[in-house]
Length: 113
Length: 114
Image (tube, rainbow over all chains, first blue to last red; front, side, top):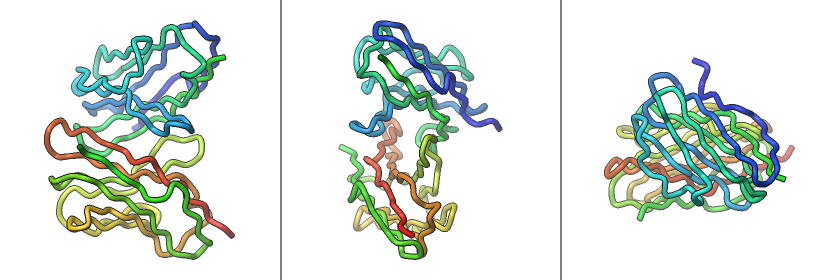
């Protein structure tokens, strides 16, 4: 299996621009998670889906952030408009079922200037 | 509320010495417990997990952890540290009830001195 695939691996954008991060979970996994990692705040859960349905989005920082999972093999995390404080590494992870071990992608390093 | 505490944000050991990374959780219900490792510029990867059964679990790279219900702990150990063990380690807890939400600890960065 190819594991969790994230794209792009690096993104540099200017403040105010829209950013879309993409994730392909492991085939057969029915839970998907989006995390943000920074030095200051550590690893934060933003949102997670089960069977393509958002279960908990309480970690989404504000309305500028949105996430979708249109089907079992694809999810997006969108930031619009982006701000410098959104600079971080964003991880997508998937698990076979809720509560089971999670498999993390390599992350997308976002820099907003 | 469920929480995970990792004692010590940084731990430094000499090569060949014992590694002990501490994790305590707060839960009245036996949870699922995990340790993950993160190497620089990579995502987290599973080291080991406890769900049910034997309370001493073995993972990859010579690591093991013991679930102690009475102490609500799941400490990670390795008898002899190797330079390649230098990384950040995260303890995580999932309650097996009510939504199966997983909570990660703040992480412990392990340094290994030659």
